[in-house]
Image 1: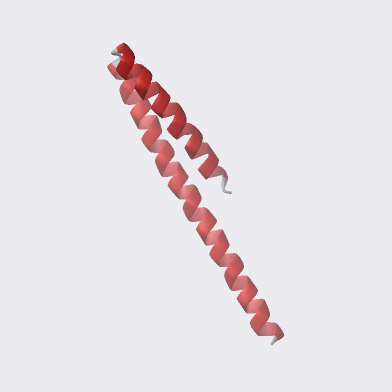
Image 2: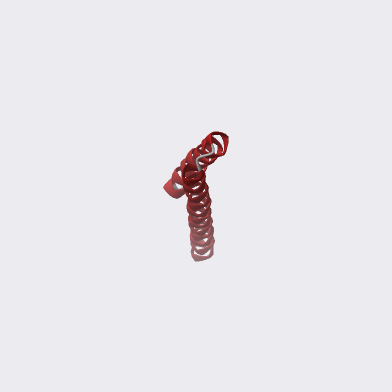
Length: 71
């Protein structure tokens, strides 16, 4: 699993907690900061997923190339 996926998930959770605390306490600044962190985490997680897919496809193509070379 790509590091961006784990870091992104961490930021999503942390941001969601901040956002909720901001809502409960009426602290708009904390709520907005939490929302921003949560959404940044979602983006980072998506980047990690894309990296995983690229790596997976590379391995698949390498395997196919080796198989074709070996006949």
